[in-house]
Amino acid sequence: MKEIVTQIYAPSLYWFKYQYHTGLVVSGDSKQSPELSSINPQWIEKQYQAIFAAFAIEQEFSIREDRPSRCFDLLQGNNQENTKNYEYFTTKNGELDGFIYPQSIHDSYALNLNIRCPENPGNDQYSITDLANFNPENCFKTPSETPDGYLGQTLLLSAYLDQPRPKNSRDLDYLAKQCWCNFFALENPEKLPPLYRTYNLFGGYIYEYGNPKINSSENPYGHLLIWFFFDDNPTFILEKCYWELPELFLYYHKISNTFQESRFFYDRANKIVIENESQLNHFQQNYLDQEALISLSNNDLQTLKNTLKTLLKNSLNYSQQLRNLEYARNTIAINTKNYQATLVELEQLSQNSLEFFQFFADKEAIAFQEQIAADLNYFKQGSSLLDKAIATIRGLVEIDQAERDRILQKQNQDLQDNVQAIGVGIAVGAIIASSSGLMTQPITWPSNKERGQYIHPFFVAVLGSLVVAAFAWKCTKWILQKWREGEN
Image 1 (cartoon, rainbow, N blue to C red):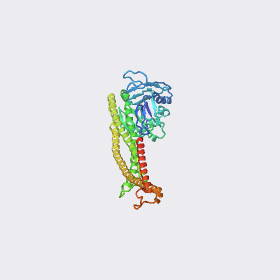
Image 2 (cartoon, one colour; image 1 turned 180 degrees about the vertical axis):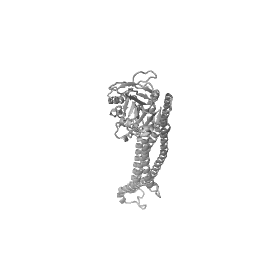
Image 3 (cartoon, helix red, strand yellow; image 1 turned 120 degrees about the horizontal axis):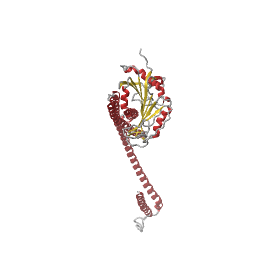
Image 4 (cartoon, rainbow, N blue to C red; image 1 turned 60 degrees about the vertical axis):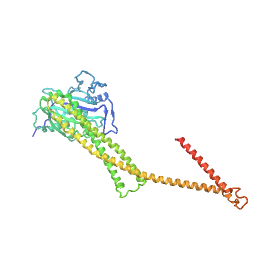
């Protein structure tokens, strides 16, 4: 039976936290994509002061507010070229010390903190049950609510083991898990994210917890790495390349965070596809699968108009999700190149192969891009179907509406003809009725001596009324025409 290791030596914790501070952030959880402001010294101070307060450290530091370049140190201090502006601290009891090193890298904050137990030759054993002292009040746990633009954090815990290096790295799985359980004071080890992979690094073994596909709501402990040394060589190599790690982990979190958000965009687009298919199936069964094209009722026409409005709204939302997916794929591709370039620098500085970090670029980052490309290919077919469905419904509505307009126009014309005929009938009837009293006047026949001397009064009244009516109609028509011209 193997002996269970409970003692480690010179434990050291490295905290890397990342947050966008400029640019347009496409966030899956936000209704709108916020435009982030530039340097925010208060936010940076708040992150460090929260940790200092947990350790009861009273130390002041100043964050610069200007922006001298795309990448620069955020602490006020020595601004000479090729120097790092970091600040040391020590806990009150002197048991732990470390440094803080915040940077601005392009569009993001890269906050870095190291806290370690100083070596004390002959008396430097450290029990893993005391690792909770490195995380008082769980100050290194990811907050339940993260701000817009939050990228994630990496915790790297390193320690020496006073034993020969095992041939199989999995022999130390239990020790690695127990270290994190004590660090986070977890009574139930199942709450810890599962071991993702283990690798050889600089002669030691490094263990990674946390799947890069899983977001902070599912994994509140973040990206966890624990690194066991068996001699001093890894420490010397780490000192040569340490300052490149904040940038490397930045690109790691940009890639993983972008892919996590792409799953949200995928779910929204897929939900729209399912909703559209349901509406289109109903439309096809009720309107297109009929043996003969039937006229639409008012309710049918209103239903189709509402369906068309819904599909147009969905089409806009659908296009936004496809745009977000395309943006995510491009972001991952760009940051994968940045990750690989930084990794090359690390390998040159350490003069070692970094297969552990290279695996993420060669396998996972590429797989993320291929997954999003497959999603886009699938959804583009749905976009074409949606456009055709909208065109079909719009055409059906327009055809029916045109037929309705033609029928309505004919009805209006018939109504106008009837009104005009009735008006003429009423006018003629009124004229005859008003002149009917003259019909009793005697008529002069051709045999009479007075024949042709006077026209019969009835005919004079009828003809006079018609002339006056025609004149009044002509004047009214002229006045109405001038009035309409004045309005235009």
